[in-house]
Length: 160
Image (cartoon, rainbow, N blue to C red; front, side, top):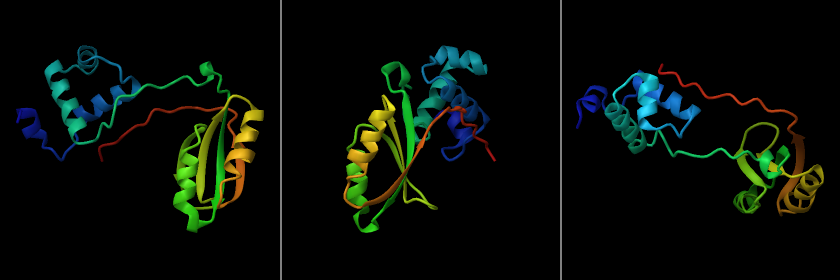
């Protein structure tokens, strides 16, 4: 075990880890040398810290963010869905099978599920909601919210 790991321990996250995470959230494509310069640490320390964060599952993966608008997906909508809870797992599977569905969240409150979808047009969105989602057995009611604008915010993680 390196002295860095001994000092920090496998169970703790410190300010160095948080600085590494903050930079990787902004740009997961940063090379180790560039990242080490940005946070003023030795590249070998940065490399070992990233490996440890991966091993612990704190970093799940390094990913690509696709510009969906450039691919023609101009409409994003969030759909509140009420379901027959006896068919919950089948409904979740059926929704997951739809390529237009980006994300499904089981929630508390007014709806049982919140489903995020993307479409190339309002007409396509209408077809997704009425001909695909609305026809899934056990879906009782939907309410669609069309995204007008989106402001993305990079997450901030506190040590406390």
